[in-house]
Image 1 (tube, helix red, strand yellow):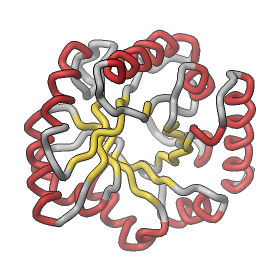
Image 2 (cartoon, one colour):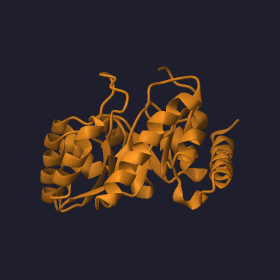
Image 3 (cartoon, one colour):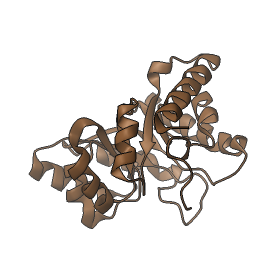
Image 4 (cartoon, one colour):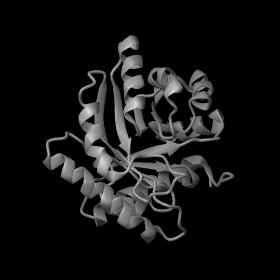
Length: 226
């Protein structure tokens, strides 16, 4: 299968799953996760209709940006070190992996200097795995309050990565918890609209649980070394 055919198939599956779940497919956006994918393959995906690119590393994204440019929306989906904040602000429209006040402060400083407003999501660690980024659910409200004080950051939602499993159903409780956390924050007046959750193996479950941004790599580009 070509990348074009794969993109078409994924989009069809997203639409079907959304309609079955009683959701509007237009509420759900497909992000192509492009870690270690060469630019020529990314360009094929863009030609097939991909409009959002998700990168894990600032340096890798910089090299690709030089070749691909601003024709798509660039999102940061990997762990972001504070010393890379200024480069991230330059490159990315949305940062999915905000996980500390210190990082928020650095992003604010960089965005102010560059005269930009950056959309951010708080990454929530719902599994307690040390290897995963994100903050614990009980710290999300406090960080959200602080982020709202920063004029150059716009808090738009929450992101999570559940423990890897061959069975998509294993991800459901984590996706549900993230949705419930967002709903709780909405009731308390936080203007969150986005849920970044669901990857190639569990995106259908994520749609059923309310995902608005799906981060899909393998289904589009084929398997890569884990």
